[in-house]
Image (cartoon, rainbow, N blue to C red; front, side):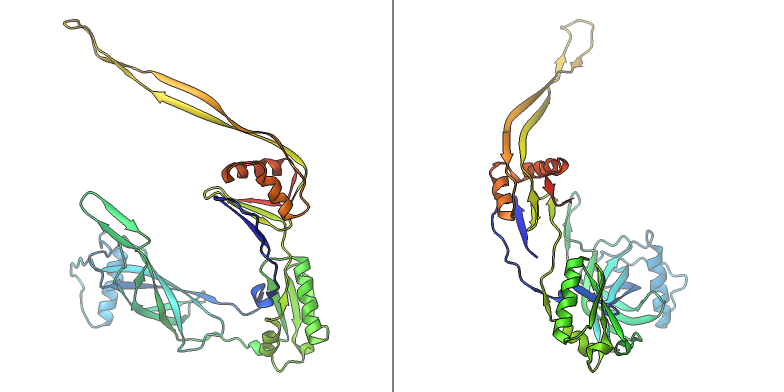
Length: 365
């Protein structure tokens, strides 16, 4: 993908050299996908940063149930510990995961706990959408934030109420999927495009020397495993995924108003257009005056408002012509010639797009 990056430092006229991309980086293979897992658990060992049990009664309930399963009877007891927190545990079961393999998990507080730093997740079953348990999680949490404060102020960096446990869950159940029994596999393009799909079809057929691939639409290319002549479906895809294709990209301009970043695709074109840009400054000042009565006079002290408002038009960009560009370098040169800041450039690009002179998809974040 060939892109041009405009940053707040200024418009830097340098181009990335296009290079072929592996098919595995352009598509998703039909059936080769992960599955989301979720579980409800308890974190212990917190240093007074856990849930307040009055505000999170579900924490007390799960703690009571867990202790009773361990043979501890706490019925009727009034316990108010500050070192436990109820959490939701999420994970992704990767494709072809086998029983006994480990996966990473994310732990997030759902009560009013202020930090999970230093906590330990107690054994938590993780279920999929079908309600079956596929993994069990447990371990020490690595939190990504910190909180410090006193009686009058508190400062927080990052998100201490969420953390991860690398390899924190073990797979207990495998998903039944006979991948090698598939007679046809579809390739789903991450960015649908007819030209890219056609190139993928052509490269695959040239590599196998026969009509193995067929483009069905802009986002799908089907593979006939029987025609491929491979020993298995996995062997055929291992041969296909490393073939290289040069993807086609739509002409697109993406701007981020918060950071002043502008990204242009290589195929962006601008028709001949004239631009004039000015800046308005609005200034409002309040200068109230306190009026007091004379000594020994009967009266009241009053505040008389006094407001000064003015609008100043600062010199901006006079009428300037942006020549039509037949390449990205010409477009960049024409925009650089305007001599305005990147944030003003965003407004100018919006106006050029509204005038119909920007021949690209315009995306504003």
